[in-house]
Image 1 (tube, rainbow, N blue to C red):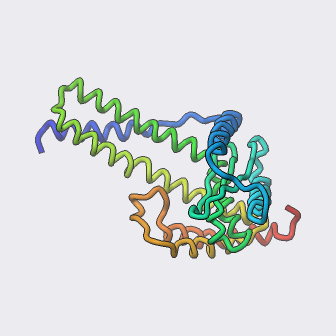
Image 2: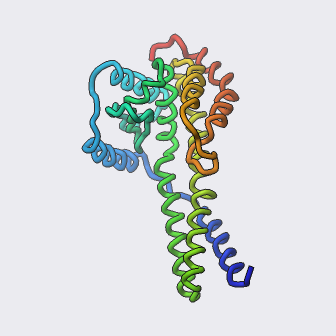
Image 3: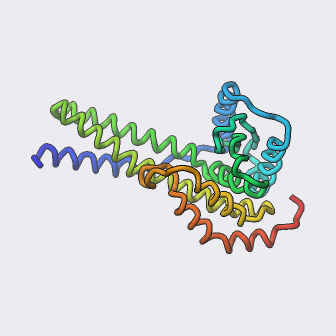
Length: 255
């Protein structure tokens, strides 16, 4: 490896480390405003269902978990998107929860739905969406600075292109995706306790994720934004005694 390449690799490492900066915190009011804006934009593009068994289940489960989440400053809302091909759910800042009808192919009861909704509520509580967007912006800014630096240094364009590619892959695999997987694991843990506190048997979360894990092929964990199914299930098993204890404490209460 020649000296120029060594210098450039050092620059990349330095920029990657320097991008790990503290994030500014967004207030609940700001998150509510951002979430409401995104919610309006999304609702103008998708078809939602506002009646029936599935819709009522989403509202009922969402409301119970939101109550035990104890974030009254969030403007919680619950939506059912008509799309049987998507077995998924997501949350926008400020507690805007969306569930696809396709999820009910796997959620056999409201407790299993609560496993997913609890996970999404946890994302909202920890502001994962906002922080993830900030992290991507950081990586993008560092990439721009790197390009400028190489331009000023007169680096050969062909080599600069290679460096940009290496940086892009490194930032994605080493900086963005591991953080996303960490968020997913944290949301699993918090969501499990939330569903238990809301009076839903947390053991149903294991049944749901084990069923879900049997679907299709999965890419290697380091390439994914989510933990591997076996990692997620093992984490839930480890937390289950604590979650069951919470469930036994709160079950039977009025929710």
